[in-house]
Length: 331
Image (cartoon, rainbow, N blue to C red; front, top):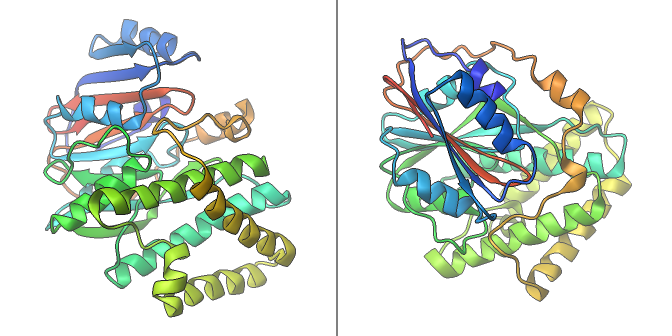
């Protein structure tokens, strides 16, 4: 809620309503929202007794949203840019139905898990650029904008809801953009076992999408076999950059490759529910959270938005925040 409060718009919009859907929250999410609602009567809270997952939360919002653009956020990310929502949504025009941003982990690279987490998102960044440049099957990640017309209901059993929405939009003929300069902050697990389970679950989700809609994102794992030149280029560029920054840890790099192979095997041996498990080691500390609240007004986007929507999902429960403005609708 604090990051949302810091968001500013240059189009003369004003808030009209904020709706929060909280599912199975056991932390202080509900109390915090109620505290905010006492100060602002525009805030409405919907509480669900158990965690129903992001697909359920997104579908509830889609039943009520009137905005033209949705900006979907995971609840355990932070927005360092006061104009993030404004800038990301302004790219969603002229036939562009999906706009992805760049997640940057706050983890240090001095630990093995921190290095692996940063490496995974660096490779995700380079793969996204390759997907757009080569018109491949797309993915998004922790945050992205999608036009309301391109956003459909997500089956409740879907594991990777973001990839489902993006691929369905691509199948429907919408263009995709990658706003790489629009950055959000996330935190990756500091436990190797949690990284392994997280990767296995994502891989399982991609396999599931192939069965449900006939396609899956062109992630690095699949590009190695289908488009080896592109995959090699992504990896080589990352290695070169790490060498230039003197951050390359060759042994840890190879161990991540082995972990990825293990994750593929694990994805075939066990099932995963659509409700994401809570990663204890990926939770933000108070110091990290406080640092992230120092919002930086870095965005140079000044375009008119039309209508906008923003969804934020909590990391320890399933929750959605829907904010409605005069011109702008946040989901």
